[in-house]
Image (cartoon, rainbow, N blue to C red):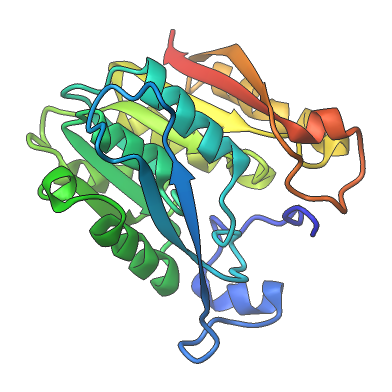
Length: 264
């Protein structure tokens, strides 16, 4: 298997997706696989929930059919280290939504999972919200919403308790920055939605090391106007490389990098 092509569809209209990827999804073609995530041993909240089962859309053109290393690694880190109590959490490009589910299990006030406005993606997002966690965790706290990066990000406040005064304390970007052409759009949503003292968690692998500079350009853009974030790398974790057919050093392809972005 090879990693995603260097084509981003986050800012494209639905009508051109079929032209790019050669076929469009239909109910007859739709298939699913299932992935079980096992929580770390040192969980702090909802300890009775030891595993999370998620459904994945198979062969999806937006790469939502994979349990990404970056999401698994970030979920492990969240479960042990991050305080979510009374925090509003937003995830972009959620896919299976594992990091958001860990946030909910650890006491987040509101958790909003978003993905590209594709019917199958959003229906599967809602399916996982309804079936992956106990209702006592998700009811009136965990939501799924379609969102096109950079387009009307203020609409994401509608699910918060006080939409006119609250923003998101934590934003999750898990293996998204390979979408090189839409870094600005992604950052626009982040900039509009993040609270003044909020934090953005960014995890990713260099699936194609020859494009490492383009991956890292995300942080250069984030540090410049109009975004003015301060990037900081704080951790690495070695896992198995996801795409065996990709070229380049396996050490780079198998390493999950952890960054934060904060307002200057």
